Amino acid sequence: GILPDDLGKIFLRFYRSDSSRARNTGGSGLGLSIAQSIVLNHGGSIKADSEYGKWAEFTVKLPER
Image 1 (spheres, one colour):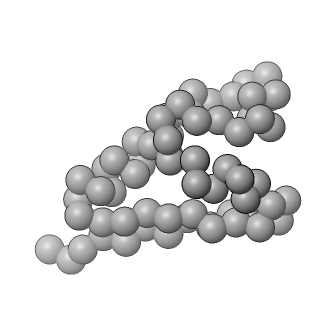
Image 2 (tube, helix red, strand yellow):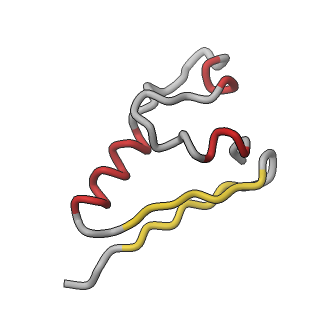
């Protein structure tokens, strides 16, 4: 799961939580920002919900064509 303080920041470009910075092989912090950009450019929405240490859920909604 994602820390409550991080939930509002995870879609920011280059954002990485403290725990991910500690990993030897960490990401660049771009993945969720890119996903959000793609979804928004298609007229949709993306959101995250989480209980730290247990689960994280991402919801993507796209309009019908």
